[in-house]
Image (tube, rainbow, N blue to C red):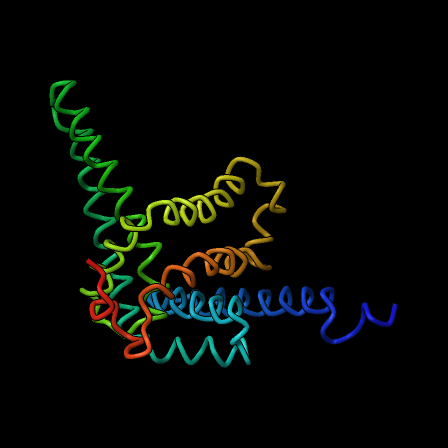
Length: 221
């Protein structure tokens, strides 16, 4: 029985990790209330989650706010860029629905819109974790996120499922998530933590002893 409560026991390690994720979730929610800070919050969330995955996190709040401050400007611009792309796609979809087009033309334009939307979603899922790991311009973040999400399509689909499935469950089976309460308790951090295993594995392929900041120099093409 004594070993169960040992500092290095699996039980206490598990409970410590759960506590870290709950703290991370609380800080993320608090800093995301001003919508303009959402980009920086997402970047800091993924930065800290990946630190927890690799057991490099010394302080959840310390790591979180370090990333939040360091990446605030670029993360905000990145958030605005992603929001702009989403608005363009939404306008495209509305235009296709409103315009008097033939059935074939409408189907083709909708298909292109859905395909473009799928690619934008994958890029957005990579963009903030990428910015948390590498030091690039917003343009390079989006460009390399696009390349990575296509190159590692299997992993990209895994991240998409891990991110979307809890949302679908919350919408269609709200009682399962205690009507959204779990999102405020651990949901955002838990999702970032699971995805952190995928992103840590992918990003590790582009980090060399010579450079750990630029994927361009690591050869993404």
